[in-house]
Length: 106
Image 1 (cartoon, rainbow, N blue to C red):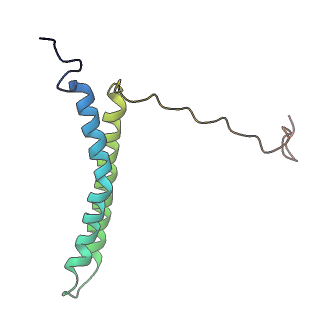
Image 2 (tube, rainbow, N blue to C red; image 1 turned 180 degrees about the horizontal axis):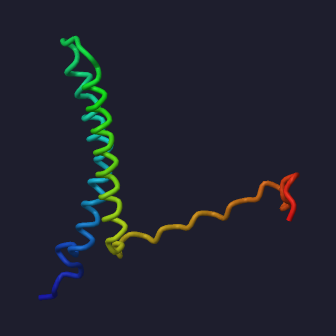
């Protein structure tokens, strides 16, 4: 009997990288849910909006922090060998002449 051509399970590093990328994709959904909480909760109450503003800015800061942590962990993990290599961006085009703007001398 022959062994299977491909392994049954993914390598641990590529599995973790894919789950981190999945978590990064869910951050905007989490942000939408967090931002809707004050809208849904304020329908029957009257009062100052200071607490709502603090909540929105703290949840915004939390989303920024979460995104920063996850993106650094994704960048630090080795790339998945099954993913195609990333294409480099095309070179920037110059807007015309290579002369310096008027008023600037070399």
